[in-house]
Length: 559
Image (cartoon, rainbow, N blue to C red):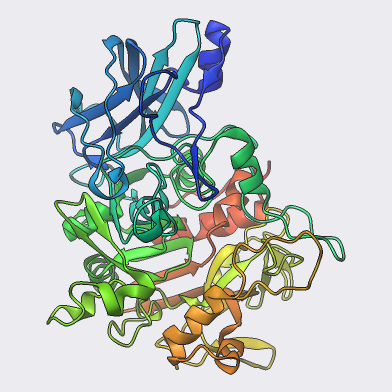
C-alpha cells in the first residue's frame, strides 16, 4: 500500500512540485498547457469517468517533459496503489482553444485493463513528470471503478456527482459559468466535454484547503470575503475547486463511511444516465456534496428506484438544472437561462428536455417531485453577503425523529454549526409554521406528509450594505433569474418574493421506498471534522437504509 501525494513526491526527492500557473483572460484564471514546451507541465485524462472489471482504461497525456510516470490508486479509508508505470516517453501536443467544448484530442498514451481485484471505489490517475533541474510536475484525474452487482448485501451505492464536476470544470478556460470562447471571448459555454483533464483541486487537495463557508462571522462593516478563492488564486488551484469534485465532497464521505464499517460501492451520474439498472440490488443509494445538474433519465431512474422500494440518502445541495448528455457520455449540455432562445430542441417534441431550470414551465418538473426540496427555494448561506453571520448549522425542529436517535439534540439546537455544515448552497420548499413546527404546504410539489426535521435560512440575494472594499460574487443576478424562473417577472417586487429561502433536512416515503434529504452541499464538513451529532445522524440514516445491525461505537462518534 502506498500513499500518493505531491507532498510525498517532494519529500522523497527533495524537489519542488510545480503546477503550471493558469493563464489569465478577462481576469479569469484557468489551467491549460502553454502553446510551447518551454515550461514544465503534465496533464492527463481518461476516456470515461468509470469502468467495470475487464474494461480498458484509455489514458491520454500531454507533458513538456521527455519522461514521466503514471500511478493509479484507490482513494478510500486507506490509499491503495494498484498500478505504477515508470519511464514513459513524454510527448507535448498543441491543445485546441475550444478543448473545453470539443475535448483535447490527445492520442492514447497507455491502455490499462481493470483488474477484477480492484475494489469498487473512487480512483485517482496521477501523472508525474520530471524536469532537467529536478523539478516535478503533477496532475490528478478522478474516475470510478464500478462493480457489476453489489459487493455485499448491505452495500451502499455512492453516486459521484460527475454532472456537476463537468459543469464546474474550467480546465481549458470555459465551463457553464464563464469562458474564453464566444462573442468577446468571455462567454460561458453551454457545451462541456469530459475528454479533458479536471482542473487542479477537483481530484486532490492539500490538507487545510479552505471550504467555502466562512469560518468566522464578519465583523460589523467588514468587506465581503471569499477565502477559498483567495487561497485558490494564491496557490494555483481552480477557483471552482471548492464547488465540485471528488476531492472536496465524495472522497470524504467514502473515507468516513468505510472507516465506520460500511461497504461502499461507487458509480457515477453518467452511469445512471446510461444504465439505470446499476441501482439494482442496492438497498441504499447515497448522494453527497453538490449535485446541481441532472438529466431527465437520471431522475427517472432514481424515481423508479424509490417507488419500487429503494432508499435514497441525500447529503447534498442545490438541485437546480436539467442537462442533456450526448456522444456516449462525453458531451454535456446546459443552456440555462438562454435555453428558450438557443437550445436546439426548444421547438421540438423533445422540448421537455430543455436544458434549463427544473422549475421552468416548459420543463415543469420541480426538484420537489424527486427529493422533496429544490434549489430555487433555498440557495446561498454562509459565504459572501449571503447569511454571513448565520450559525452554520440547521435548527432542530423535530428531535423525536428516528434520524436523531442517540444525538441528544433538543428542539432549537443547532446541528452541525461548529463544522459549518449549512451552506454554501442548500435546498428548500414552500412551508408554513404552525405551533412552532414547519410543514410543507405542497404548493410547489413537495409531499404534504414530508417531515421537515431541521431548517436554516438562506437567500438568493447578496445584499449590498455599502461596506467599503466589498466585491460581489453573487450580487442580485441570481435573485432576478430565480424571479423570472418562478414568476416570469424580474422586477423588484418579484425579486423580493424570491429573495428569502431555507435549507432543510426532510424525510418522506414514496411508493415502497424512502428518501432522506439533508439538503446542504457542506454536510460532509461535519464528517471531516468528526462532529459527533452529524456523524450520529448520518450513521442512523445509513444503518436504517441498509438494515445494518451494528451501531456506531463511542470511538466512531468522537474526534
